[in-house]
Structure formats: structure tokens, C-alpha cells
Image (cartoon, rainbow, N blue to C red; front, top):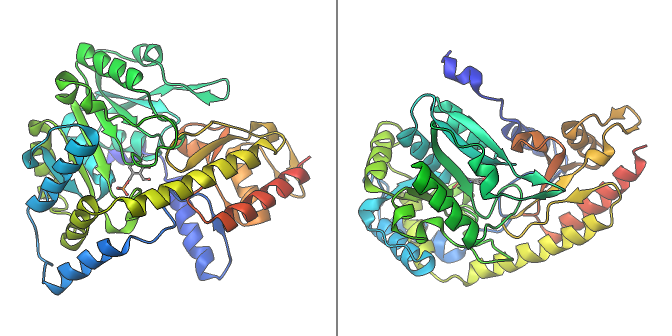
Amino acid sequence: MNKRLSRMDSNIGAEFRSQLEYYKRTGKQIIALNLGEPDFQTPEHICQAAIGAIENGFTKYTPIEGIYELREAICTKLREENHMEYTPDDIIVCTGAKQALANALCAICNEADEVLIPTPCWGSYPEMVKLVQATPVFVDTLENGSSVLTLDKIERRITPKTKAILLTNPHNPTGTVYSKELLQAIGNLANEGDFYIVADEIYEYLTYEGDFVSVAALGNAVKARTVTVNGLSKSFAMTGWRVGYAAGPKPVIDIMRLIQSYTTSNANSISQKAAVAALSGPREPIQTMVEEFDRRRRFIVERLKGIKGLSYISPQGAFYIMVNVAGYFGKSYKDYFIGDSTDFVMYILHETSVLLTPGVVFQAPAYVRIAYANSMTNLETAMDRLETALYLLK
Ligand SMILES: Cc1ncc(COP(=O)(O)O)c(C=O)c1O
């Protein structure tokens, strides 16, 4: 086996996903609050565009970097909504934002390069970095029950080997939305330290408090060293369609294109047509989803306030909340003993059929993540059951 793979952690998140499929097949009803996936259907006009693509025989290979029409629509979106000027040559369409991130890291990292990752972090980041033989360097943001990323914390982790920083904004799993001032300061730091910013903006539309700002919009110097990654999975309820994209300095985009040409080629042709309809179509369906996510966010926060022994990181965006469960470590009920957050998740799953994600996945072992991308009815049931199950732990 490839030696690089021995450095990779097993994917606990993906394992839970498989377990969920298994439960579904056996007919067991699980309330899945582990999934980072909107529970809404893809808006109708987007589906119709895909149907049109099939009916018109748009089912062949496309250019590796994606169809021109889509790259143009992406440029228009970035100009109008994010105040960033790109041409279609600066854009690559990928099979999800995930592939865009992996391609970007593959394009910019050499062996032994270091990539800064503020933690808690999305579970894929450290493993993607290891896959390209670079080293993840964690910037711990946790302090006094909050997640606070500061310039000082980043500065302390910079070395001559620092090649890039991975910034997710709004953040998975903490829900933090970074201020313009912080992003500007990180941009200046990257300019001084001569490293890249990989800006993952997949949760852009899901901002409930504060203003979302794209880091590459903060001046030409920072733009020249930023690869902005975005996609349609979360904001347009299009997880299964697998469309993401990157905008960045042309030499980096060209290498990403080369990598993609030898691995997966173009993103799905039908999904690309759907993505054109999504990006150039009305934003009302998205607004409706965002309002509903916000309603659920406020509901979960209110419920958590009332549960003894739990605290949470206050979320401003995305659809996640990180809950500190360390107050339950050392407690037990029947045969269950809660030694860590994975035990906590297993106990809650078996006792209540509610599935959460343990914090180890995000480099935050005292926490579990609740994804509130689920119906209000399910969230109400899940929180009732959670409260009852916690009451039993002594
Ligand atoms: C921070 C972050 N980036 C990227 C992705 C991947 O998105 P896509 O479905 O476009 O590959 C996810 C999905 O969970 C995510 O949480």
C-alpha cells in the first residue's frame, strides 16, 4: 500500500454515514444530525435545466475546466456578489468543492510544506494535506468556551515552511463568521509571509449574523495569493450533483486543470447545466432555506441553554453547532460509560436513535457537532430525547 496512506486517519464521519445507510436498510428510524446536507430539495428550475440538458443530449465530455457558459456565470456571481473580478480563464469547475480543495492543495504544496488549519476544523482538511505529503499545522482557536481566531494565534504557528492557510468562512464546524478586519489582517500576514490563502466559502449564503466578506475581495495583493473555493452543494441544496469551483491566480488554476485532466476530467455535464441555472437564476428559493436554517439555529440554541452540563459555541453561520459535552465525561447509565465524546455519541445513538458527530473528527475532543439541517419536527424530537438521555447519566 502507498506509504502516504498510513498517515491518514480513518474517516469516522464517513463510517457513521455508512452506518446510517445500514440502519435505513434495516428500517430503523434514525434522526441524523450528523449530516452536513440541506434537507431541502434542489429548486425546481435547477432540476428542469438538468432535464433539458439530458433531452438535448448534453451528455458528453465537456472541457476539463468546465463549460464556458458556467465559468462566465461564476465570474458574474463573483463580480456582483463578492466584488471580485475574474475572467473565465481564472476559473475551474470541479466535482464538488471537495475536489477543488484537493486539486488546489495538490497544485501548491510540496513535500514537507506546512499548511495552517484553524481548529476545530472540517475533518477532510488535515487528511487532504497529508495526502499531498504536506504537514497540517493546527491553530487552536478554542478559548473559554468560544472559538476565537486571532492574528497572534496564527503568527505563532508560522514557520519558513508555511505554504498556505485554509480558511473556512462561515466555518464548519463552529459556525463562526470572520470579520472583514480579521480577514484583512490575515491577508496582510500572508503577503508578508509569502503564503497562499485557500478560502473555502461554501457556506457563504448561510450567514445569519455579521457580514460575509470574501478574502480575495480585500485588495489585489491578497487576491493574487488566494484560491477561492465555493460550490453549490450547501447553498442551492445540490449535494448530490457534485459541482464546485475555484477562482484564483491563473498559474495555480492551470495546474489544477492539469491535475484534473489526468484524474477525473470534467465535472458532470448535466450538473454543469444545472449549475448555470442555479447561479444565474432567482435567489428567492435560497433565501427561504436560509431563513428556515436561521429559525432552527435559534431553536437549538434556546434548547441547549436549558440543558444542564452542556455549553456551546455560539454560531453565526453554516448549519452546525459545537456542543461541549465534557461535563458528562466520567458519567454512566446501565452499561454505558462516557469516557469521551465518541462514547457520548454512541450512547445518544443507542439510547435515542439520534446521530451526532464526535469532536475528534474536528480536532475538538471535548465537543460533539449538531447539524441542524433537519426538519423542525425532527429537531424538536431529537432535543427532547437528548435531554431525557442526559438526565439518566449519573
Ligand atoms: C467546509 C467544507 N468545505 C467543502 C465541503 C464539500 O462540499 P462539496 O459537496 O461541494 O464537495 C464541505 C462539505 O461538508 C464542507 O463542510
